[in-house]
Image (cartoon, rainbow, N blue to C red):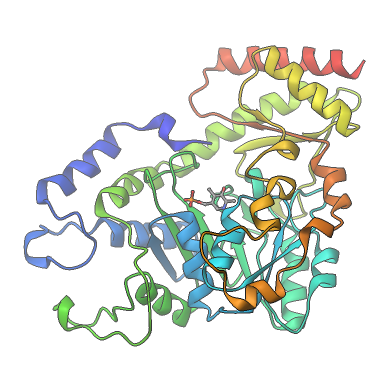
Length: 398
Ligand SMILES: *Cc1c(COP(=O)(O)O)cnc(C)c1O
């Protein structure tokens, strides 16, 4: 997945252009920036590649989720439905604006189970936030129908699945809002960065203002601009955006490499008795950033994960025990441990997750191993990896 593996001359060239002007900020300084507007350029390229009207760059993927929610008017006490299997950024962004994260089971797609979503809807629900984990997507058609029925927003977290598609649409563009991360380990990187995409003019305007202290960006005198509503600083720097300008041009090249490596590895283990793969919803095309498969039981999955690691097969993840990606280890959320007092709405409404039953999620995630697909592998390395994986998994499943 990581674009940093192929950091090269085009990235350096883009950054050098910014260094040559010395204007490291995305707004203002029109006279001395020598025509360099890297953040704007990347927003244009991203909107075009994702087939949407608008893109808004921000400082991280977590910021993108926060700004996306804020730009849609989500606030204190609103409920946002999110999966048990994701990155902590999901509930961080929800809590950041005083809203309440409502955790819901995942199914064999390893993303939101539409039936569980429907059950979790209350009169306070405002948003359904599927997270396209490990390169593949939620059943977006079903989720969109649920959102339409209950007048909810569909916000896609496509941070791990940039370049994948669903019913011919780029992931992130199917819902009302989509978010990407360009942190250092994502498919394409800015070093740090993130983006929101949308076809909604109001959401774009709100995101543009909110991510820059509420500045209305009218006129050429920054100090004289109006502030129609409260905002915050989630700006990306021109240096980070410059890296992204180079990387977005390489997205499709990266996807081709990932698909090739993924397909080779999948073919090598597909016929092993006891191995099955995550379900890709009909109409979905992965971005191939991970290959995720199921073992017959949690016990065998643990054994297989250890055996793969001992055999030198690196970058395979057993998420069930992971500190950052699965609800079981989110004791800071369960106990609502925060530095200062949380908003009263959150304290009143946060479900008691110590009593929650997510056995349906456990049944899938406990059996899952996900192997990162690297861009920098040689053909020889992929072949060796496939042989080792196949031999180890056969031995474990004997
Ligand atoms: C990486 C990631 C984020 C957060 O992105 P940052 O840029 O690291 O803040 C959010 N959601 C998912 C699914 C991610 O993988």
